[in-house]
Image (tube, rainbow, N blue to C red; front, side, top):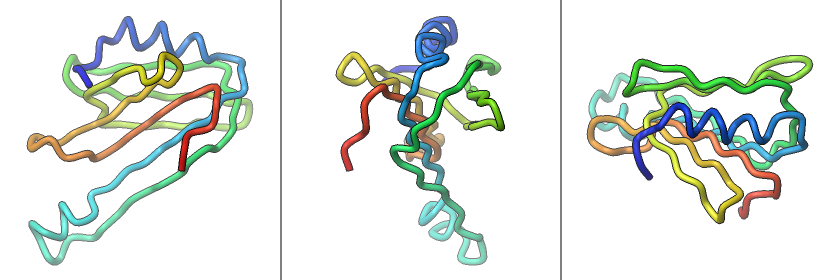
Length: 117
């Protein structure tokens, strides 16, 4: 993965607009927070292969940390804390957010075909 290049990522997001796509969304502070502070709450989301159609996609940020939103007819999918990106198999956009120590904190992936599970 490499640091997010906002223009390249926005261009790729636009290519998925108004198509049925599969989305993977994952967040966690899991063991990271609990390991550092036993009183910390563990939170997380794991959603895989949700098929959606979005009419608009936008990625914004300050040059090091980004947020991406997918606007659907009746709501939004939103991921914040994104830092890195890559294309996998030339068809799957992978966006991820890593903490200062390189641990995964958030992942948003979009594909026209289902993800393996």
